[in-house]
Amino acid sequence: MKDRIHSIQTCTKDHGPGLRYLLIMQGCPMRCKSCHHPDSRKISEGRDITVEEIIEDVTTYLPFLQASGGGVTVSGGEALLHTKFLNKLFGELKKLGVHTAIDTAGSCYTKSDFFLRQLNQLLSKTDLVLLNLKQINPLKHKALTGITNRHILEFAEHLAEQHVPVWIRHELISGISDQDEDLILLSEFIHSLRNVEKVEVVPYRNGNLLGGISQDMKTPTVARITNAEQILNYEII
Ligand code: SF4
Image (tube, rainbow, N blue to C red; front, side):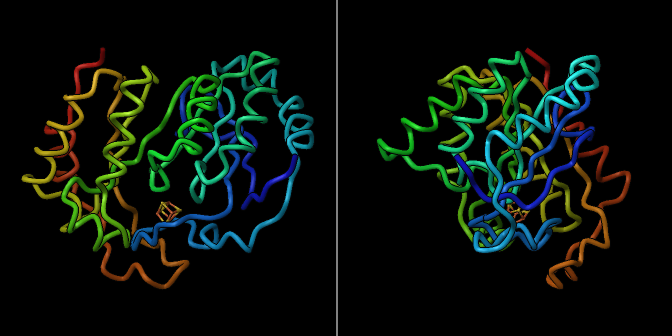
């Protein structure tokens, strides 16, 4: 089975525990103004790769990944556009005893029977979901990403119902996603979930201008980063 990827990073940090083999899938329905990988958004671009090719490559790095307590993370683009492919891939990785993680914004979540069947199969082979919640306010979310967020919050609730361990990531952009009223609502939502192990504040970094659309985006100050960390601070379960 083959599917379309943007790229591979063979040994990274910051995408789950330990060292990670990071697979960046091609295609994303969102249009975030802060996008770090705008060239991963068009599904028609990228290159095809098979599950067998990935497994062969991952096997080369397994001693490093496993010695560090790491594994494989699939990101994007939007990883969950590729649930059928990931089901096959994670099935093979689990045979090798590899820790599996999905880094997602949850933007293609629907309650259709077809999608939920594929998703739940995949979640049964997934050790960790890194869930990017970009804005709790639906109008501000739409202004930032091009879509509203109700289904993304429902995805977070679905992960809680399925008892999937989750790390929440919130990108902090000055004047866009660092306002106290939004952070407080986001914190309340996160605290309503029972499966969140960690909350990470990810400060936006200037210079992500590959798509030429990020001119309004500004790095938050240290004081605003500390403030967000205090509001979102989560007592780990
Ligand atoms: S979710 Fe947003 S930041 Fe991530 S790839 Fe899609 S457009 Fe870019």
